[in-house]
Length: 240
Image 1 (cartoon, rainbow, N blue to C red):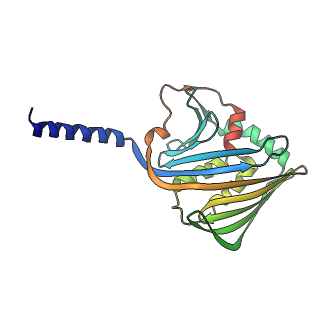
Image 2 (cartoon, helix red, strand yellow; image 1 turned 90 degrees about the vertical axis):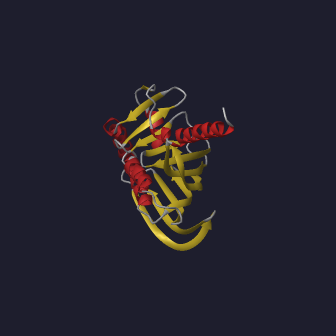
Image 3 (spheres, helix red, strand yellow; image 1 turned 90 degrees about the horizontal axis):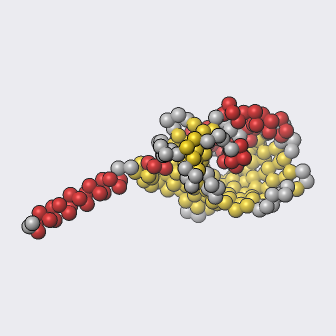
């Protein structure tokens, strides 16, 4: 075999491998944020990291639980996916509505107040403006300052994810929709929760928001995964 022919074969093989690797990539957004909540009502303090993978195909949220939350654009449905167990559970709104109705009955009407304070600042590399929120019901009051930025590119797919998420949060969905309808995305939140005489502080900080190529495998449920009934505790964790 000549050197020229060997080089040509190597080039063709390299190109084929490259095409195979990138064929499953889709344009999207990777978003990472860190969350902290102080201990309250017998629950320990919690530190978590969440990763959102956003594309036209849907949104996948990975967190420090045994499941991932997957929203698929093709059917506008949510799924809890358990990679280690190779299982998944569809999240049906009709099935969880009795639980949401019971929660709303206990909380009473959720009222969301919001205003732009006029304060400007910077979080990481993003220029921000501040919004103040007060979310209250019969059993809790949540005051929060949000640093929003328009430096992050708006994504209609991420907006759709949050709009659909709000449907599964009962009265608290009003707060989620208030955030979606704001100008820009939140770079940081600091808040104080008051419930039954106890208080807890919380923070949420976006550390990554970047356009990137994502694996299409993030937005599918493998064919060898088994469908299992929805675990209501996991549902509550996913949509809290």
